[in-house]
Each structure stands twice: as structure tokens, then as C-alpha cells.
Length: 398
Image (cartoon, rainbow, N blue to C red; front, side, top):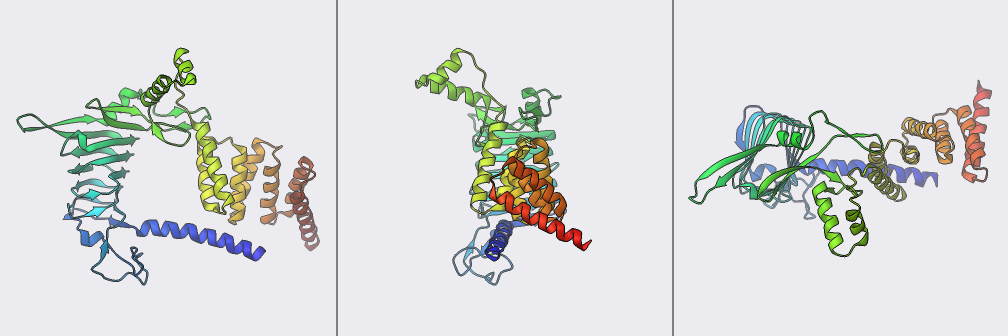
């Protein structure tokens, strides 16, 4: 049984690493180029098909030259400076990423299947689109521009946060005589109109500082910047849309919505506790499937939203124990017990973590406390017996 358990844990770790490797392999990186002006051609980014019909992973025996090519899943421009890259119409890619670039212009003339681009940590960059784009996500950038050659109608949304200097949205206005003028709006200034400059962060009910995120879209033929509000399922929306949803529900006969409107109840914008609970449940689901690395991810996101959830700390400690990360398990279990000394599972996992670190006398003491909290728990009794035995052995050996 123990051998099967070890094999299952090893397989879980290998599966997690394999997923990360595949994600990287499916990107075409344009990295560390300086002072370059060039076209990123289809031949450069296309990946050979494997014998199974899927795109081969670079470095594997199936990566062989072939006339049958498949488009890469994403293009990732990283750590480039003073460059201009053109993506021609013949190119096809799923997604675009720009990371840590300086004074780079990216001319996007190709089909981006998801119509999604992300840029972060960059300065003085320009994204020039001649095709429709559904979402441009901009984080921690300075003095950047998004240029829409065919007008604002080509843009779905810009989602932006923690940007400095300016973030200009520039578009062409075509008049009736077919002449074209450029209009622009600075989204950093638009953010400041939504929230005062001194309110750089908002505090949630759980006491967590959440950095505000904004969304700019074409509303009534004008770009409108609004705060992003996330519901318990992390779906991004806005205060305006939530009000519209409530009004629509009330018109449809929803008595609860009608009561809220009648009593002028404000829209609840802070959903941090609900989102934390949702992440906890996702972590529990992953744990039950034996996907401990994913469970750690979900529990960590839950704790980011609400650090005081002692049960989540206990659950993450259980994951770390399964993964052999005993020091991390100890830290989480200690934090859990500090928050709630009467939480049996927290005490139990603290005892297991101490046992795993060969701190047997301490483990026995903690497990005895856990047994006092739940005298009928067979798992605790067995763990206490083993820790006590190991503590005696350790003492005898000196």
C-alpha cells in the first residue's frame, strides 16, 4: 500500500511538471533581441506535427522537419529592447504575450485565434492592431500605447492595472469624406477619474489589500473606464452591469431584486470571502482527485483572499505532507493552530509534520493534544502511538 501511495504521489508531481513543460513548449519565444526590425514569419513559429497528428514538443524524438505544419499556441515576446516586430497576415497564432520589453513596437496584422494579448512589466511599447482584438490585458506598464488602425469598433476591452506614466488608447476616426483623424484617451488618467489617486488599493472585508483592476470598453460609442468587480466565481463585471442585472431581474418578476431596489440596498462590491470559499472548494475537489499540486494552488488563492481561514491552512498543510514538503506543512499547520487551537485537524497535521521532520517528542505532545480534542479518532491514536514509540527510541539512542 505504501509503495502504491508513493508511486501515486510521484505520478502527481510528474504530471504537474509535464503540464508546465507542455505550456512552455507550445509557445514561440522571441527573446533578448536589441535594435531589431523584422517580420516574425509563419515558418519561424510553426511547430512540426508529430506522427500522432499533434504538434510535437521541442526536444522530443518526434520533432522532425515536415511540410505539414501547425501554428504555435502562442507567441511570447520577452526582454527585447528598441525593436519592431511585424506579425504578417499569413501568420496564425492563438495568443500573444509581451513581457519586460522596452521601446518595442508590435504590429499585429495576423489572425490571433483567441483575439487576446497580454503585456506586463514593459515600458514605451506600442501595440498596433489592424485586426479585431477582444481583450488586451495590461499590467505594470509605463508609457505604452494601444493603437487601433481601423477604429474603436475593433476593440472588445482593455483590462489594466498598476500602470504608470500614460497608457494611451489611440484609434482612427473615419469621417464621411473618408478622411481619417486620430483620437486618443489616456487610460491611466481615466483610472484616476474612477478612483482618487490616494486610493491606490482597496481593502476587502477580510482585511486584504486588493490592487484595483480596471476595464475600458466602448459604451454608447465612447470609451468608458470602470472598476472591475469579481463575483464569487471570479467572473469580471462592473458596478454598472450589476445594477443593470438587478433591474432586469426585477422587471422579470424577481421579488428579491424588487425588494433590494425598493429599499435602495447598495450593490455588494466586495466578494473576497465568497471567492475565498469558492477557491477552497476547488482545492477540496482537487485533493479528492489526488491532484495535490493543483489543490495547493487553489488553497493558496483562497488564502490570498482571506488569510484567516484556518481550515484552508490545515488543508494546504495536508497537501504539503502528501508532496513531501514537510517544512511548508509545518508552517501552515502552526499558523492554523495559532488561529484556532481547538481545531483538531490542524493539531493532527501539526503532529504529522513534526513527526515527518523527526521531531518525535514534540509530535507526541501535539498529537496527545489532538487526541484530547477528539478521543475517538483512530487515526490520531495510531499516529500518537507511533510518535511516542519513535520518541522513546530517539531518547534511548541519546
